[in-house]
Image (cartoon, rainbow over all chains, first blue to last red; front, side, top):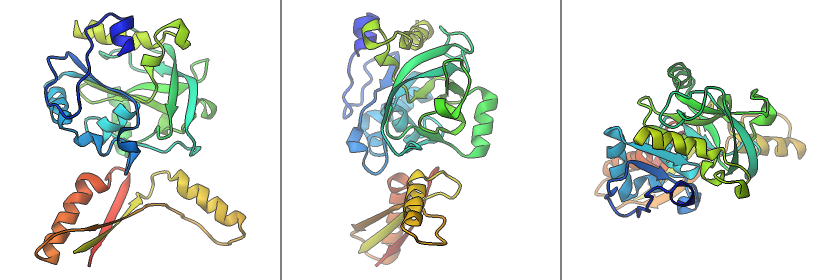
Amino acid sequence: MYALHDVMGQDAFFLWHKDESLRGADCVVLPGGFSYGDYLRCGAIARFSPIMKSVARFAGDGGFVVGICNGFQVLCEAHLLPGALRPNRTLSFICERVYVRVDNAATPFTCAARQGDLLKLPIKHGEGLYVAPEAELRQMEERGQVILRYVDADGVEAETANLNGSTRAIAGVANQRFNVFGLMPHPEHAVEPMLGGEDGLTLFRSILASVG
Amino acid sequence: MQVKVFVTPRGGILDPQGKAVEHALKSLGFKGVAGVRIGKYIVLDIDAASADEARAAAQKMCEQLLANPIIEDFRFEVA
């Protein structure tokens, strides 16, 4: 909210999970958090919130949907994105600033970046290890659905740069239609110097350009 | 009718918890331990006219909520 409304000056508003109207939003953002205490599986219960019926319909009609952290988990549970998020390889909650590389800049969520750009974004999660069936992963790679990958400061994939152990260092993915995007890092926590960086703005600028 | 659901991580999916427990067991001196996987045990009561009806309901519950087919397998017992 702060990123979109205060920093970027957009008409951003909250939607209540029990409501069904998206109130004409051009883009729906599912935020991070710990919906339902992460009980059963992260996002497993929240995906059945009444509002999710409208979000699914909106996504089916081509509307832009972004899921950040727990939001990403909800989108995977709701099958609006492929794959699932598992507990971090270290079995610990990780709170760090990491680099992600834009591996597909030709999407509505990354068009303000260039292919290969590095974004420094904070991650704060206990279950960010992305998995998907091997055959599906191969197809996703071919189609360019892997949008962001964890890398080191030089833009190179390395075990030490992939803190949660995500398959193929995957940090963010899109659906086949490229209108739904999920990522574990928090771009909304990197929108001004006081927060430690502004690289998150690149993703929001991309969305604004695509929606406009 | 009581239903017992067993949800386990799919083979082939990395199970860090299972691995951690496996290492712990080995550190305790247990030999020949492998393939530790940690799952969930869910118990619930279903109001059903028959065991078949309870089974059908349990199947749907597992498919929709109790297990994520991408990462988990499930089986259940109806008492």
